[in-house]
Length: 318
Image (cartoon, rainbow, N blue to C red; front, side, top):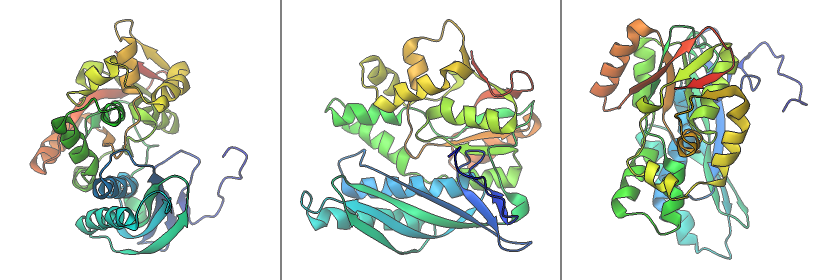
């Protein structure tokens, strides 16, 4: 991307230069479009559940910007010589059900024959230009709040290897299929400084993007980070996605770990998430209100660290 010219159109309110979750372009003084696209290969065996999770993941980018999803298009790569068409139908049904829950009509889409199954959505959202939430406005003194547990990558890797349990699968699939809508609405109501959603680059990767874009340092408290109950055990057992090690290698030059943070714990913080939660930078005086409002809406929120003025573009894990 560094070889591409940065957008200079005055209508572009958020481009790709800050590695934010979606792009935003102004239509008028009162209205802007939020645009994003996301798709991935199956992480669970059930096609309907896969469709739900992928749709929730795609919609999340609009929620992370503070926007309201308005419409969507399906994106499909389908190996028709491997799977029957009933599998594709179930995937699309799962995606449509989740989009309907969000109040978003799917208007159509595009399908190609592919050697590997892929599904996701291109989503258009709406937002007032003055209410955009980005990853670039965290301020020193803010507290960091996370809205979903970490560990989907390691747990789904264990499930694919046949080492999981039905309870483990139900918990992680339920979390991945859950919309971030309520959390985003609470952010807008309470008033926060910055938001990003935690997906493929893991907690450390997306937190680092926030630190760099905002020109601040972050302190993460490992013991405060919520993890799925099975995630620590599956990581210790060696069920580590390849993306985890790549994520850790990428962020390592900019992260200072206390000596007590073990190699397995460092991997967990780099675990690639699918349809993960929101990472929120909120003024300290509003943090309790945010957590309480989230709880009232059924969203579990955990304060996991703080924003500091020193060490801009770096993270300390304590």
